[in-house]
Image (cartoon, rainbow, N blue to C red; front, side):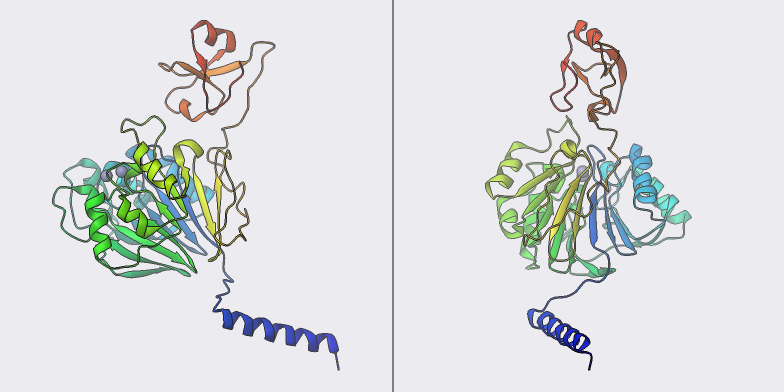
Length: 365
Ligand SMILES: [Zn+2]
Ligand SMILES: [Zn+2]
């Protein structure tokens, strides 16, 4: 009698019974990852789950290159199960035409509303050219994404010309972990979602409308009751997003906030029981878990903003710094404020121009 084998078989039998008793699902497949892409003042979120993937929104018209680079090169995908345009505003469907042109997509979802813009017509044209059809999801519908699934929560009603409230809202669930996406839905749509009686509770909430005060109403936040909030917005955007009221409402509830304007692209990884976050700029990539077992297994996975480094190329005593055409600050190479213009000057030249150091990227002084 091989006692070791005997012991092992007892151990596995015990483990199996333990799992069954606790109702645990053992996820043998890969984790689910939710990638909140840094697309400035816009939204684009890529979800990967094993071999399956879904894109919720596709940034502005000029974000096609970074989004496709992320999908194809960073995530290594040539195919998406779903591409969802939450609503026909440019900052959500801007590069959806390019995505549909470049990668194959099974299901394209849009809400039942149109916009009289070239951006929207471009999306419709590609859908037509590719012989795709548009799926208009209904509240309560559930779709699968590998081992994950998502339920449609909005739009609940007809919102006329109010495109934000038409946003497709959905709750994505993997094991015991869930994420809520509401596009730019504002408090009217939020209140309609509450009235459906569907379960809105989620661990991670992508803050509606880029953190605008018109969304994330108290009643809504109280029911969603997330542990983490992710805000997709651009640094120094014209709208003042995220609004202070929203940040206060989140903080006062003890919700941990992640922001693409401050941290670059953000990846939330989950094994179905715990969640960990990795941020591109790496300045706050704290690993947190819903049950204390989180591991930062995707550390270093985001490299799209890796040019953001303390790479102050020195030239003698007068290091090179970076300035913009009109800004009043000087920066380190790769600072996110250099996206529109990036001019190299010496530190003394920058000081002569009366420029002061950027408080975010810590350039030489
Ligand atoms: Zn928007
Ligand atoms: Zn919008």
